[in-house]
Image: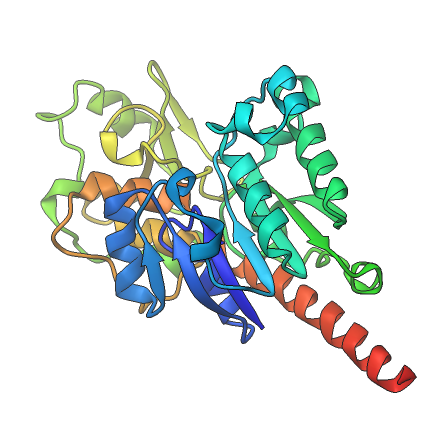
Length: 323
């Protein structure tokens, strides 16, 4: 089975499918810096271009379309008139490619808030569009800590659509699994890292408050403008794209050598990327934090991909038997 990836970022969705033998053959990502990381870790064609400018005829045929697209509001008036009025909305570029290429399966990932975004209208339009194109759809909000054995509190909505009704019937989202991994399995609290990751009295005027509040060496904290928040669940808070800015809400830990923020590598590991995932050395740290925060939890994707593959395999087997 062959896949293509839209809004591919650094390729976390593609990686989760690859781990189940589903190869991506083509991908698209507009962000130049994310494209650099993507190309270091994947060996298929990546087009670094605005998807609005990519013609459907230039995209290879695929079995599965993968997309973790940005969440934007729709103009209902534009939606009723058709795609041309909604050209600026990225979901309609996904829809255009579904319409033109007709893959068996579509897999979409987005923020949990998409369900209630714009009074539920955004989600309604997406489901309605998929139904119009003949896709039978299931969706589920899943937390990385419950479904990926990853100690991060990260809820996302996953949408899976099948053209074949039997494959759709065969498919179920994975069940929750126990969380056995701790922050210490991923983050090295004891080894000294580069000085730039440490918070000091000289660099941060709120350092005294951090020092007073941060007493638990097994969890993460965040500076919340005027106070320090401890993550009592011993999970990482949801990683965000602005972690590299040095502002509030950056996850912090009480390490052996002082108070510090996570390294970009640790952020990728908290997204379930393998240890051998390559990060480019010649781009700014802020870009790496952004790429990690914008990405997906790979083990959750892996488990969904496994069930998609099984549903199609089971359906194929039934068809073969009936012939």
